[in-house]
Amino acid sequence: MSEAVRIAGTAHARGEACAPCCANCRYRAEDRHSLEQSIPGLAVFSSGFGASVADSRLCRLHDQLVSPDDACAQFEPIPHH
Image (cartoon, rainbow, N blue to C red; front, side):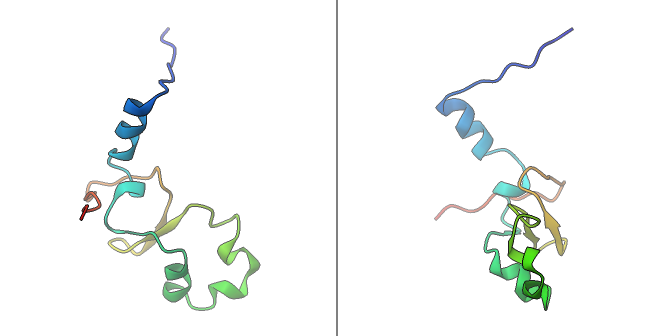
């Protein structure tokens, strides 16, 4: 039976930062306020900007909420300027 090993350090952090997941995708709208613009009236509900949204953001490609660890085949890395 194999046991999961947690690797700590900067090399591991760099690997996670470049992983093909929604947190690193160009289609993820990083601004939480874009949720209200996309879903009119969301702010009326107290959870609109609260814990129920947490780190979820809008995927502009799929027009749906995604969590940072979600991923899909259309992943494109965030361009660095």
